[in-house]
Image (tube, rainbow, N blue to C red; front, side, top):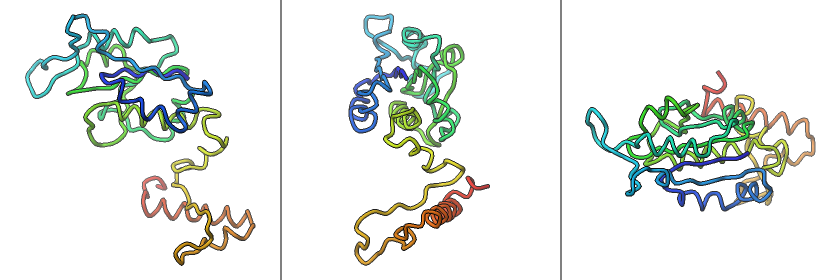
Length: 222
């Protein structure tokens, strides 16, 4: 998968994308991440990308020219353009699995009060939100989306079925996990996990997952 991220702060992404699973995915050429500065596409010598909103109001709005030029510079016939916005549809596991099938994603990060609506109308395929809150910019949202999507790209995770057993798969949260030591500060690992009876272990894990879901996210089980 090719991912082009358009923002005003390309340096924002270098730490998260240079570590752990995303780093290995790039090294194995399962994922190509390109970082572009929208200022580079401004048609003025001051590289200005924002202006005051028509109709008045606080803050500044990103102008259509540089954003449109940046999108068109990287856009391919297979590209899906996503604007990271608190006004978008909520990101969930099903959407991540769907996006993992795409060949080319363009993630557009908003800044200031947002982006001129004409860009969204003409160039953006979908707006996605990572939660009911507002961030200082869309960079962190793009990191969250890409991290979540990458887990469904074949061979990115070490275990082929790892993503299938996580929270939100099958409409429930994950079950509790335990490892060594068997007893820690007086608390023991549940005996069923030590029994070697895989049928009973699977049953226990399902029961615990359903209990957690009903306690914390009953809306998932509705």
